[in-house]
Amino acid sequence: MTPPTFPPESVVKRTRLLSRPTTALSIVLVSALALTVAFTPLPQQRQGAPRLYVENTESGDITVISIPDHKVLRTIPASLLKGHPDDVILSKDGRTLFVNLLDRRVIQAIDTGNEKLLWELPVPGEPHHLALARGDSILLVPLFSESAIVAINVHQKRIVGRVETAPGPHAIRVTRDGKRAYVGSLLGDRINIVDLVTMRVTRGIEFSEGIRPFELSPDEKEAYVQLSKLHGFQVVNLKSGQITHTVNHNKVAIPDPLPWPHTVNHGMALTRDGKTLVLAGSLEDAVYLYDATTMRQVARIPVDKLPGWITLSPDERFAYASNRGPGANTVSVIDIAARKEVARIKVGKIPQRMTTGYIPAGR
Image 1 (cartoon, rainbow, N blue to C red):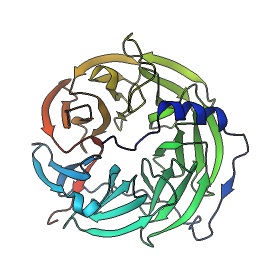
Image 2: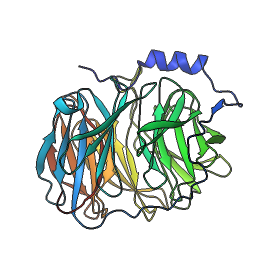
Image 3: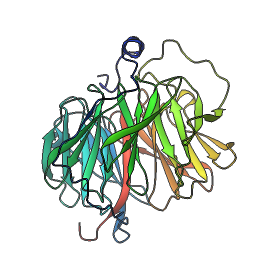
């Protein structure tokens, strides 16, 4: 089957023309959202076992992999999820794995100890990439089909806020201080900045194409952004909204129209010190490493077919690329310092988003 991740390119083009966002964005607030609660960042759990979770969209399951020996430990079965996952994110304490299911339009919470379903919540639209905020008490969910994001209180297990955004919200990142969310629009060609205290869009930054994965610099001065038809990335000054760099990996022909998943590249990660960018070069079946301080390419690493997501091990020794191309169904393990692929792990069908963290001892 073809995973229902993105609409056909013709639909993307048509919707972009018909749904260009206006400067006045509609905002919906729900009083139940505890907006006055002070945010205290949660340190990531450091005791216990590091794990990599890989959601497999077509087979509908999740592969659990040990770090650093990179052995498949088990699979969270499709019989638990009962749908096609498109993202996974681990709580900082390592106790809960959150999963979105595109086809069923639900969010699930799974206990990482017994890998049983804790709860399931329907959402009013097609859920895309996930982010946690407010000490992991709030799960932010872009609704691609509704041009909005919703906030779920994971303790109350209910939606407590909603913000209207530019059309087709797809990617999302939360600042390190937890005060703002950046929401990338696939159909509206912009990044909206949401104040998570007032739950309002404060401004938008325009681009020439749909927003794919992006990362924020640690000081929140810049963002590194992948676009649908750019074989590389752009760097934007977040204060001025001006594009300061356009970086091309290689000069290669861009297919027109783009086949599924309707993007040239998809996947990036930035090390915590803000110095190293790891990017999926989906068009060339490669992973690129860049010095983020100079925008200099330092390595091109061949991997399996169509890498579509990048995540880092908790200690940032390794980068992982999920290879979702025809017949691939693997995860490439990149040793960042050695600048090479050191392992390739067979997983389920069409692996996409991944998450890492420390699972508490005894779980």
